[in-house]
Image (cartoon, rainbow, N blue to C red; front, top):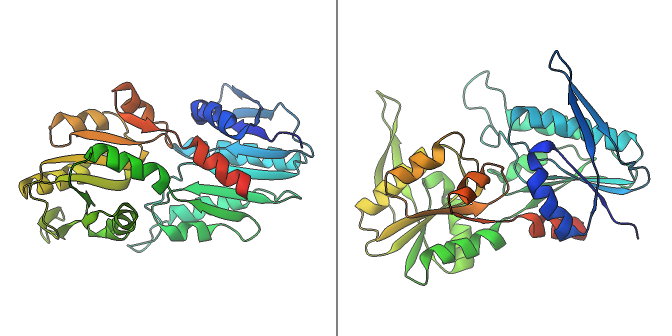
Length: 307
C-alpha cells in the first residue's frame, strides 16, 4: 500500500515534520506566493490523485482558516481518494455559543467552512484535538466524519511530572472547567479542586470567592485546555497559594501564549512551571524558555491510522 501524502499549512511546518515521522507519511508540498495587492496564490505541487492524503492544518490565526480551506479543496478537486484533515488547534472554540443577542457563533461558522470542502470518494475525515467544548465536533456536516481526540495520554504524564511524586491536587481555573478536571483527576487518581468566582455587578470583573478543596501543604497542578493571556490562571494560582498550597504548576493542552503572555505569566512568581503540547505554534515560546513541551504527533498519527 502506498504511503499517505502529507500536506500542511505554513504555520505547522515544524509539527508536520514530526507528524510525517510518526505516521510514516510521504512529504508533499504546496507552492505559496503573495500578489502585490495581498492576494494569495497557492498550488498543490505533488499530485494527490487516487492517493490517501493527510492535511495538517490547525487554525492558530485567522488567515490559517482560509489557507486550510483552499488547500483542502484543491486536494479534493485533484481527485484524492481520501482526505484526513488534522486540526491540532481549533480556534474560536470559546465562541461555541451566543450569550448576547447578535453574537456570531464563530466556532459553528468556521466548522461550516471546513464542511464545505468537497468530500472525497474514499471519505473526508476531520480530526480535532482537545476541544474547549465537546459539542463543537457536531457543528461539522454529516458527510465529513469528525473525530475528537482527547489529550489525556499526553497531559496526564505532564501533571505527574509537575507533582514530582509529592501529594498534589488537580486544580481548575474556575467551576466552568470542573467537569474536565474531574475526569482527568479520576484517571490519575487525584483529588480535584476548583475556585469559585463571582462577577462584580458594578465593575463586571470576576473575583475569587472560595475553593472547594483543602490544598494546604499540597502541590496544585492547574489543568486548562488552553493558555492565552493567562490572567485567569494567575488569579487561580493566587487563590490556591492563598489557601496554603505549597506551589502551583500549570499544564495546558494548547499553549497559545500571544505576545508577551508567557513573560507576564512567569514574572509574578506565582506559577512554578508551565508545560503542555505543541498543538499550537505558540508552544515554541515556552520551549525556547526551557519549558516542557510534548509532541501531539504520535497521538494524531495513531488516530488517523485507526480511522
